[in-house]
Length: 433
Image (cartoon, rainbow, N blue to C red; front, top):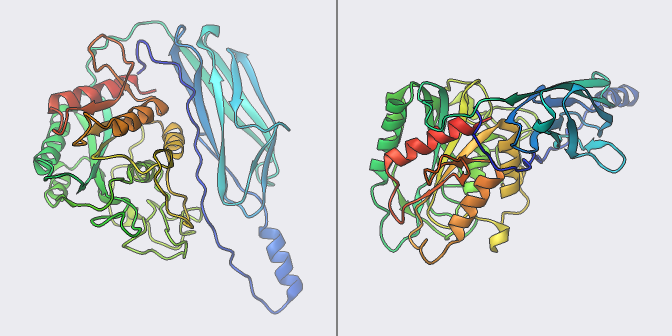
């Protein structure tokens, strides 16, 4: 359901760069082995999503959607002659095509293109067509559809019966002069309140500290799943009962990485050795040849049963997907002067890669700022608001009937009231595309 008036933003698109090793082929006949290599050395295209739908009011301005183009093959993928054939409406390609009118995707990597629709031109139907050098998919078509909304959405319309998945991400390494108050109560209360408020809800949660580089993290790594998306209230609550907060290392935290893994689930191999190290690495959600370990490490989906099958944390099809994350200091970001680990497979997440991953998966964010010194240091709040804008995560925080406020809650050092959190979740459900 769309907001009555949402800001006009160009959605960022999704990018995922993964590291793959080469596996030599050995045999007795060199000519036979050469034939094997040539047969396997081809591009392999995977497009997500397979169709694109738009909905907006005629006055909402240009609307955008992101199309992910993955190359699972071992040779360069080239997409050419990209064109939009529309019977009605006005669709355009606004980002992702080079000057030659092509998209080039290196082996085991991903690129993206952004499609726009102008709702002032009316309803639309059409298709994006392209040629590829994938011998199994020489021609590809992605269906496009667009619908102009004609009725104003009531900002108070109940959504508590709608299908929603909520994943909680908590920074469990505090950097304060004293202990952060009532973490145990907050996680218990928010889980109970989510199940009590929404009739068709699934909840999961994970924790993060920072990357395991000397002096950065002392409690946890960059991300750890504690429970996948589930409708089992008791199971999620039991996992939360074991949650504790401890003193951390550096001021920065790896919130970008935690969010990226929760929605994309590609894993992270810090030293790029192809083996999972419990102290530094992150398992992928599902084992795949294009994950950070080249398919050599079991996925988290083997360990954590989930209600759904979508990448990241087992999101359910047809549900609004929301990540609620907390920060207690600045997020590790080169724009803030922070360093990032070097030499990893699965590059460290940035605000751009998070925005792109959320654009492809259509996930919304709700940030909670519990930084002790937020009154004198605005940096964490600025980061949270910038990420909300980049991911089109808006709520009506000032009760003016417009969903145009970045989805960030800040109540000083304290956790926000549960009613405030639930209202924010409802707003994100109303404004989700």
